[in-house]
Structure formats: structure tokens, C-alpha cells
Image (cartoon, rainbow, N blue to C red):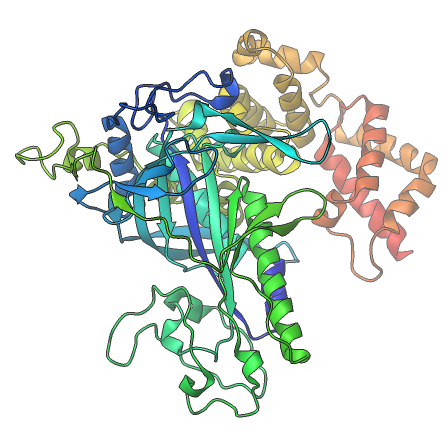
Length: 610
């Protein structure tokens, strides 16, 4: 449970969160021009744009059919309903990064709408116990639109005003905007959903999903509500399973997601009502200021899963503190309807960007230079784009992450913790690749060893220094490491050290180590093998303890009195790692690190109890 969930156990508030994902299609050219759709960071400034991208007079848009195919494939993979007919609109607003003064989007009739998707949610409590559940989210739409240019603010010479510079390379890049219904409550749920979407987009090869390159960005809308401040049918069905405690003076309401006349009202993000409209069972002691809530705050351009969770949780707590303060001191609530950004520096909080109290008139108008987008349901249809057939695209979709998860769980009997590690770090495709790449006769033992000692060790201990894409480049070496671990040739510490050394090597030298015999010789040269038996390690450890007894006592004092030191607590202790490295230098790192860890754990518990 996240910090927001723990804090909410003390307050009768229900958070409501919606998500917008902007995913850039990995096409060769832009959405409405023939300009290259390349990574802006790998191109010189203002070099990849066409006349239409900078809105030169007389230039006309030409729709990129590959982007349409990618959007249809993404919609089908996510579970949205593809519309056979959609139209393009002009969304007018005036920013320096939008040369035309409008953005071409699909406001009235999007490419796809409706549908829902299930996604796994993996959580850990304070005792490091794993829990895996499945949740669902309803989609509002998926639409095609083009991106704006990139603005860079640099300080001026007089240090009073900033100079805004424009890079047109990103202008016109194809975007898929994926909008959900407000079916989330906490940051960890949104993070799990975005991870699942990223896995699906990678599996169908429509988006690279690299936050650091800007190919995927996330916006969220956050609001908090009192359970008794609006009719119960305005809450979402998924929220019924997440009970929020009520104060004694507040009534408990049944939540069914349907109004009295049977109308489904679950897609409402907020509901404004007066005190008189409340159910007659509401306590008359509740002050009107305590019933305030539901003001929507949008958080823009979040570029990390970690920051996404932190931003949502911080914003929920910020709004609750404002409402609780207003109720306590009988003051008006001060949550503004605004757009905020997440400051990922040391402050770790959302900061105001611009006010949204005045509704911006985007003046949506039809894009007259583009005809309606008509798709073929089957190849026999007479009308529609000839190369975009919905049935053919549906048949071309590969096995999706959900199917891969179910297959791997059934074939290799994965535990909930192993399942959660793969889900949390989006490594199901890598694990599936390693299993298929290794041998046709992969046993359950080998597969779980590969997961526990390779993926878990690397992603938990080496993150974020270790990039996910790099693991695909060393697939052969990872398989060798897993097999050598099975034979007690190396331990988990050697795995981590070997991969860190591989990361520093060039591609040519690294590829030479794909052969097992060459790789084993290299491991021996790098002192990444077990050469000291456990009996000798135990003797060396006793000598080490007698020489560093005071240091060991300092480590044991880091933990609370009473309970024994567990594995997770010891691994998170910085002083222990320094002491462990000192023992490694004594053995030249040729001992079994797992055996040494058990010795350290036993010795520290003895010192703690003495």
C-alpha cells in the first residue's frame, strides 16, 4: 500500500484519478508530412521538418497510413472498439511551439472508443509480503494527433527574463492519445496500468515507450471526494472493493454504480451537488464546508513510472490536507482547478503551472483538408483505405503480455513473488526470450533459478544503473550465468559483478563472450568464480569477525531491539555492505557470497541478542 493509501485510512476521502497517455508511433515519417520521424536527441536542431510542419502557406497534410495501421493495432491490442469512420478536427490554441495555431486531432469522432482492459497489480507490504491482484480500467478513447515542437527555456544575459527557443524536429510527430475513464484511486494502480500499456505497445511494435526520449508521456487528473458529498451511484464500481473508513458521524452508503432508473453513470469524473440534494440519512452535524470536494487538478507531462506514483500520491495528500484544514477552521477550500507539474528534484512535489478556472475555448472545427477516415472491416468491403483492414490487423497481433504471463506461470509454476518481479520491472518478454533461447528442455528449476538469481538480482540491486534494453544484448551471457549458478560455479554477487563489467565493455568484446568456454575463462580472470570452499570461508570469517568486532556491533545497533534481523533489513543496511565488501577483499571475492551472507546474518543476530 502506498503512502497515500496509508494516510487515507485516517480520513474519509475517496480519490478519483484518470489517465491520458501520449505514445509516439515509431513510424519512419511524421503523421501529415514526409519529414523523418527520428529521435530529436539524435538529430541536429531544426533539421527534420517539412513545409507543412512549420505551417508554410500552401502546404497541405497527407495522412500517413502506417500510423493509422499502428493506431488500429494498438486499439485492438488494448481492447478498444475501433470505429469504422472517424474524422479529424482542428484544436485551436496559440503557443510558440505550434506554428499553425491549431493542432490536428480527433475530438468529435475518434479512431477508437470504449472497451476495457485488465492489468496486474503487484504490491508489497512493510513485511515484504507479496500480493498480486488483477484490476480493470475502462477506456474513453484512442485518437490520432500530431505533436507540437519542443521548447527550451534558457536564461537571458540580464537574468531577468528567459529566452524561449524552439526545436521543430518534434513538430508533426504522430501521437496516439489514450484516454481512460477515472477508474483509479492511487498512484501504484496507475503505475501498474501504464506498465501494462507499455508492455502491450512494445509487443505489437507500435511505440518504443522510452520515457527518457519522450516517446511516451503521461498526464493525470486527480480529485478527492467525501463518500457522502455526492450520490453513491457516481462512484466507480472498482472502488467498492477498496473500503475507506468513515467517521462516526458520517453514514455508510451502498455503492452500486447505477442510478435508480438503471442508467449507468459510472463514467462521471465528479458530481457537484448541494447539501439539500444529499440523502436524508446524512448526519445534520456535518458542516457544509466539510462536504466540499471534487475539484479536478491535472498533472502534465510525467516522464517516469516512479515520478508518476509520487506525483499522484502527493497530489492526493495535498488536496486532503487543504479540505481537512478548511473543515477544521471553517474556511473555504482552496483547491484550485489548475494544471500542475511534478517537481522531481529534492522537493518531490507538484507545482502550479497555469490556472484552469476559466474554460479555454479550443474552437474545435472540422479539418477541411482531410476527408473522413474510413476503414475496411474485411477485405471484401468496397469503401475505405485499401491497405488498412481491421480483420487483417487483428490477425497480425502477436501473443500479448497477458497470454505470455499465463503461459509462463503454467509452464514454470512461478510464485507470486516471481510473478510480481516480472510485472514490476516489465521483464516478462525478457524472461520468455531467455527461456526460449536457452534450451528446448528448460526445467522448472532452471527457469526459476534464472528468474530469482539473474533478473531479480540485477533489476533490484543494479537499478537504475542497469538499463532494461541492455539485458537483451547479453542474453547468451545471462543464460550462461544462470546455468553456472545451478552448478555452484558462481553466486549472486558474482552475477551482479559480471554484468556490471559487461556493461563497461564495447559491443565487439562483449560478443566474443557469448561462447560458454570463453565466458568461463573470462569469469575466472575477473575473479567472478567461487574458488574457496565453504569450510575455508567459515574459518576466514571467524578471523574477520575477531578483527572487526566493533564494526559488527555498530551494524547490529542499526536495527531495533527485539525482533531478529531479517534478510530484507540486512540487505538495505549500508554499513553491512561496506563490511561485506571488506570481507570480499580479504578473500579476493572468490568465496560464496550467499554462504557468507548467512554467516553475517547469524553473527549479527548473536551480537544483537547478547
